[in-house]
Length: 554
Image (cartoon, rainbow, N blue to C red):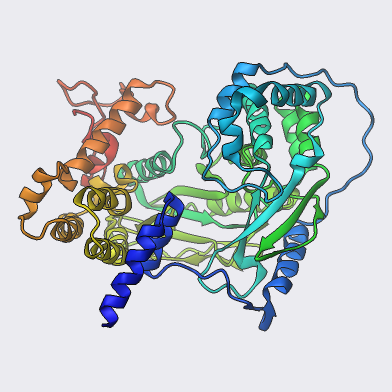
């Protein structure tokens, strides 16, 4: 009887799921991850408060978390107006508006603009061009309605909520126009070690960058180990200082008109928090609003001048990884500690806060490591770990990625359960196949280009075991191989290999790709013969199995 009620409940939910958002709510509920946002009471700082009180607490916190901006008067300057946009460009941007994205509750629905493009494109173009001529951003579009997202399942402090700004959708069109102008002026001036928010610079590429460097360093006979330090920055986007950002834009020779417009964009902003009820609008002077199109690129500019000549640094948004090879006959502790001191000074000068207690380092080696090392930031000793998580991938000190595969396969138990429930509710095979490919296989193969070549056979067996379990749910009457053939699903081992080959060819054929330098022939060393791309000989199996060596002859 209970089972029938549960089945009927989820069946009703499935029928009511008219949109993609509603559909995924059903799936999350089946996984046990759906969080009830209608709760009337919340535990914050050891005190139970109502939703209305929580809204006010969060609004107060978000307004003050970044500090106060120095709003000293600036001399009046005459800026050149920016080049105006065209009706065609505005039409194109209006067509790209995502109707599934939430907007400010004071805004009219996005689908209205999408359905009336021909009627509104001219007045919208006029408004945006007026903005470009005057270098002033409309006040109405500076009003943000903040939707707090929970960082943890049961947050107990305001810091455990992430503020996502819901803005006016026409304002996003104007932001895109500004962003295109900003990219055209600074796109080639950003450091190559900066990833995120740019084409050809995904998490996959950032991971390939660091892992290849680590394997190459460990391949050298003189190297004892590689020390990698992962720096955690607290409230990075919230603490971004607009005054400092403007100075950095000027140092990159961004035009005065565009600089003035961006300054105005970040000035006189107001926000409120909506969570059940809604707070009053309050002025916010610091930070880059999360949820804007411009915010991520503001951070790229802000972080661009953090460079360390002595050791490599790879930056992905607010995640920074520093690493150095330590020789067998001498330690390189001084160089790494000096680099950490440089990062600490940069943070102090730029209103950033480093969370030293969450900053970690790991010693990567192919044998037993050397003498113990200690590093510190903000007078706090940095913790040494056997495994660290970098951009969603768990890295162990031997670079076997067995812990990563274990964690991923174990986490997919709830998704297999959800798939099983969907089968019981009568979802067709085509829907189950889509669910597996988008919600299970995508997780299994995330960043596989970076780690798949270095994992052992047992890890691949674990991955195949998950796929077999999914195929049994899809059609229990067919054997694993037959099920894959019937539903035209490539075996996951071959799929991973094909993904790696495709990515290698993309890097090989694109000379502007930031990783292309890793596959250019090094004529200073003896090379393998008769290969399309000849890579230097390597000493260790670890480097031979790495991405750039494994797929050099594919």
